[in-house]
Image (cartoon, rainbow, N blue to C red; front, top):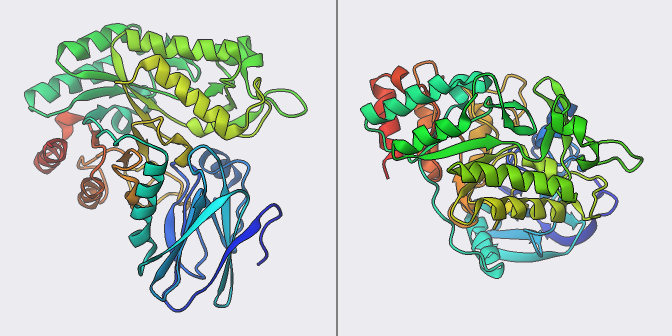
Length: 440
């Protein structure tokens, strides 16, 4: 198949039996893996999935290979060809590989660097590329992630203060080495109204004080680049939202049973609001921030500053970092992976996990252990180099399908370990596994 318009040929090679190609997805949830050359790659099963889980400006077809920032081909003859953006962290260069018989043509829509190294698989070459890219960018050593407990996979959006306190007490009585107690979605009134409490959380600040009084750190979840259609933010400040070229707010997706808009952090009013949100939470003693669905900050649209999407995204992350301080831990989720490097401490490297193995809709960006394992394995070469890899939460309660293999996966990744069970509901195996993986 020919390359797409806007893509120029940057490399050509001849492949033989055993050749494989590595596709890197745009954001956390985008499938990332290597395929036997000629195998059909994973693609979104619905437009909703594409909007929420892939790069919105990209429409990869089922034929050929499409990668974000870096693409690699093991040619089957002992060499791996790594084609990567010349600046993989501050640009959004896309790559394609077109296959015709034994001929592979790689195209890109921006400047790239090509390296050919010895190796029989793409994963043998990617760690070297990552180390070289980190050194070229002058990145400091990646900080390890603290151990944590997260409310999400047990309580979802219905979490109450009492649930958090029960698990906080269980950590003490069960002697679990949890550094951070992280409150997930459910504490705020609406998506975007982060400082307005939900009915379940009339006193978030008081709960943070309770967590800290137990000698643990407090964490919170936000989706800072999103404003839900029901939010006061969207209603009172439509000028803070990313706009269509022809005017009007630009939809960034649909979730929580409402339309979602992207907050334009280049707008001075929006920037000041986001700074207020994060500095307020930090002032309450929160120093662990799980920022989710943040790919919404990198979608195309008219911005107040006129910045391109990747630049605007990185400037938004830098604003958040400046607001919470250098010692706070930032976990990026639903995040453009390479453009986040240097601005987050850990990053989700896969789709959400799930209580079951396979995704309900068969889409490898949808919540499931299968999809989570696929992309975390594909991005393992980044762990400890760009950031700490977050494979998603450790869930090992009796109701979890294939819990043994999921725990083994979390342990193998060797990055973030975040428990997300109701701790008093764990059986003996679940409790001992949780304790063992939290102990470092």
